[in-house]
Figure: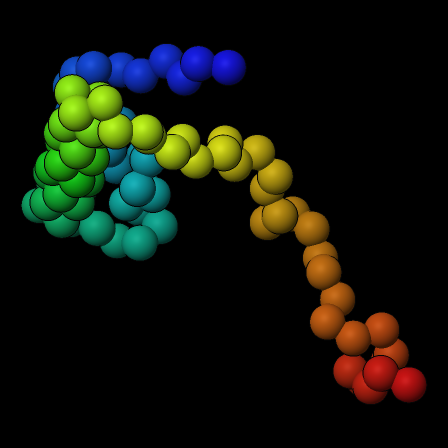
Length: 88
């Protein structure tokens, strides 16, 4: 299966969308902090895209990371089976 790659970065999200994505109200981020975080993430994405495009130009094999689809945040995984965290 060939991976489709976006060859250009999308525009940065608006301040309203950025605040929602970063849960700014929950973490009490200021507008300036939200802007700094989004700028940082956008720059990281630009670096990553640049490295990827360089690898493609040099015909270097690119290893694609498997998509992450299993969300374990809703599951409870017990560490021990006994009551009061005792194993026996």
